[in-house]
Length: 215
Image (tube, rainbow, N blue to C red; front, top):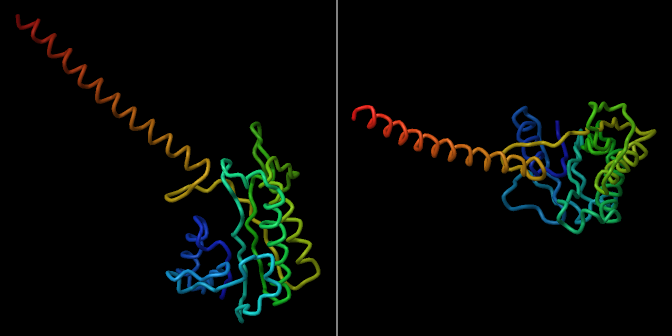
């Protein structure tokens, strides 16, 4: 199966692409504007994904599209609060890619959204059927992108699927989970140092007691 993927160079995308290649699929990494020299599977697409409907080099024989690419700035970046920019990158681009996939009669398109569209819930677990309650500009853009995705595929032959992953962690990850991992390592290092100091101190005390007993 030939699969066109956005966000293939990202943390999740690298793992997904590698896994699909292992299973015998052909993954084409859609690059924005310039194809990376270190990727032989890269396809040079439009610099702005929202303009993909006018792109003239759609790969023939594409069976599926996985849309992982998104604008997801950290909270410290100015764009994290720029809802207009997030809508251009996440909502308009998703809708345009879905329309193009449907026009090319792609069999299936998978859109990676976010569990953040449900908002924070401290007292219960969340299911896909729960109402959406996005609490940040990024989450709002993802919720709106889901609606645009389904609207763009409505009445077409392309089957759609939306996934809402919770924070993904692992080597090379970033975001809140990466911060927690860093804090855990710092705490572990501090605990190890504390244990070492305690052992040294305990050894000295034991030695002193022994001296007193001998005398």
